[in-house]
Length: 137
Image (tube, rainbow, N blue to C red):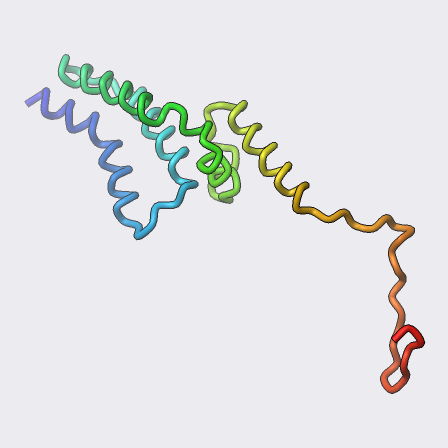
């Protein structure tokens, strides 16, 4: 009975993520990094009492690391998490991966951005009175 309780306790965080992802019609990319990191943290804090529970915890952490250990390095996941106002930079474990995502977004914006005219180049607004035509028209 103790082994079953330990196994259930170790599987509880995985069940929570499965329920969260199953509840939505579409799982957004921005949730992957926070949920995987949260799952890992929850499992690491668990202290199973039985050998079976301890072994399950070790195997689950190894499998999560194997399958999702590099998820923060995947640009689409990192950028989606960074741009989601619910998460931003908070859920990144790696500050290097986070800064790379920030730099990617900055560079993408700079490539798309047309520079604003210098203050001396800005045209002053002119008042157009209804019924009168401006010479420049």
